[in-house]
Length: 94
Image: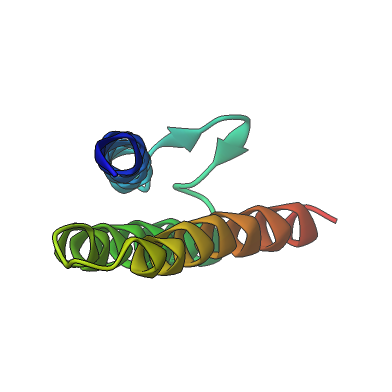
C-alpha cells in the first residue's frame, strides 16, 4: 500500500509540474508554437493547466482516502487531460 502512495505522489507531482509549465508558457513560446500570435492556443494552455491543477487536488484527496482503487480516478483523469491536450494541439496545427 505504501508503494502505491509513493507512485501516486510522484504522478501528482508530475501533473503539478506540467500544469506549472503550461501556465508559465501560455504567453510566450511553447515548444515550437508561438502562443502570443494565437489566442486559441493561449486558451488551450490555460484550460489544460487549470484542469491539471484540479485533477491534482482531487488526487491528493483521493490519495489519503482508504481505498487504493480510487487512485485510478486520478490516473485516468490526468492521462485523459494530457491526451486531449495533445490531440487538440496536433489538430490545431493542421
